[in-house]
Figure 1 (tube, rainbow, N blue to C red):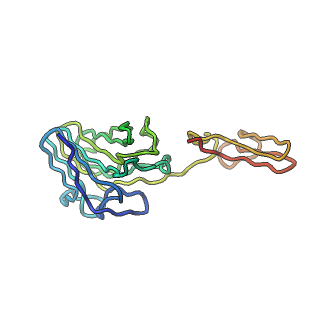
Figure 2: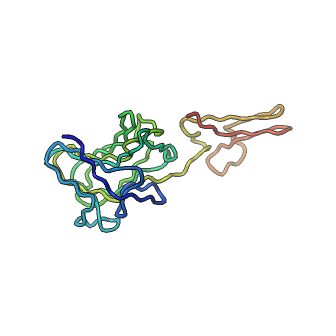
Figure 3: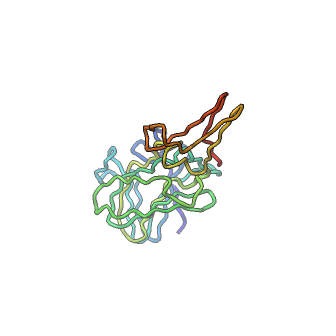
Length: 219
C-alpha cells in the first residue's frame, strides 16, 4: 500500500525532539506504512503515556509502522549526535524494528525486544545504527512491527552524549591525531609516566620551542 502522510504541528526543543505532546520538529512530517488495515493515531490519549497525555498508537492487522521523515531533499546532518542516543518510550508485546534512513535509502537497523506490554524507555546509541552516514538522514526515526500487533510510542528524541576526543581507549572514529612545532619536538600519544587522571596514558609533548597537537575529523 502507498505511504500515508500525516501533517502535525511542528515545535523545536532543547534536545532534537522528534515527537511529543507539543508536536514534531520543524522540517519533518509523519509518514505511515502498512501491509493491511491499520489504525494510526498520533494523538492517542488512552495509553497512560510517560510524557504528557498523548502517545502514538499503531494497531495493525499485518506489518505496520510510522516514521519522522525530513522534508529537506538533502536530509538532515546528524553528525553532532554521532556519540549520542536515540531515546523514546515504547509499549509493545512483540519485537519492534527501528531504522534510521539515509536520503539514498540505506538504513541502519536495530531490533528492540518486546517490553511485555509495559512502558519502557529505549535508549539506542546512534553509533549502533551501522552502515549509514549521518550527513544526509531522511528517515530520522522509523519504527515498524513486522507482524500484526498493537504498540505505542512516546517522546522520541535525539540527545547528545559525551564526546571523548582523547582517552586511553583511543580517539573518535573518522578522526586522526595531528601535531605541529616550530622546531624539534617529541610527541607521545601513549605516555605512561605522567600519573594520568584517566586510565594509564596521557599525551606528552616535549619541545624547546612552540609545539602543539590536536584531533582532526577526517569526514
